[in-house]
Image (tube, rainbow, N blue to C red; front, side):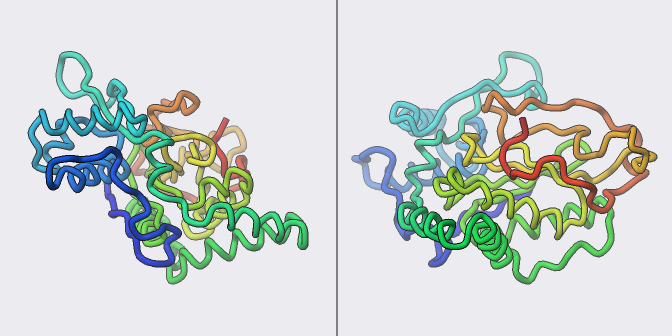
Length: 297
């Protein structure tokens, strides 16, 4: 998995210092540690307490103190690890991630103003004006990224990482994860999620940009605007043999598992296996089956 840290420069859609500490911290440095835990939950969640301790150099008791405080305030929640995450025998370890409340306190700058402006734009120019605005907004984010020239598993994964880096620069805390026969682009934060709830064109434009840059079918598995823990997009690295046959399933529906959204009940994994995946790389885009950019049903 490749993760890029969340940026907070001007123009990313977040106010500097938009979020205060999750709870009042009395000891010196306690607030900074709490912020580091929150940042890790945002970028790496779901994550175990042991992993948090190793990353931040905290004792088990220290990690537990911060996690308990965040859970009590409603900013984080715990879950049991999925079977594929379990290492060794014994009871599955708990994993932790931010809740919608926790993400909301990270700051969504100027939501009311942006929503009002979007409604006015729709009133003046209709739905087509909203769609065009959404496309131009995403084009600005991915400026400088060239379309994938040659489809191989390695080049497709590298292009997905390049896209994730661009979205991180725009405040989305994006990362990529290799999952089965594909790679997932996970946006752990969305500066415009509250506006996107009313204007799904923002999500749809992102998905279309992914398709154009990667030159292959991609599938949106989850969105923060739809109540999921992250915006997750599956990018296939391979296709089944004879993929041109209408009777064959596209790789976008093969080996798909929503790792970033394991806590949200509607995101069930599809566990079809791919035999000899090295034989065929991702193919050019096919007709879109999910155009809304929202969570797949």
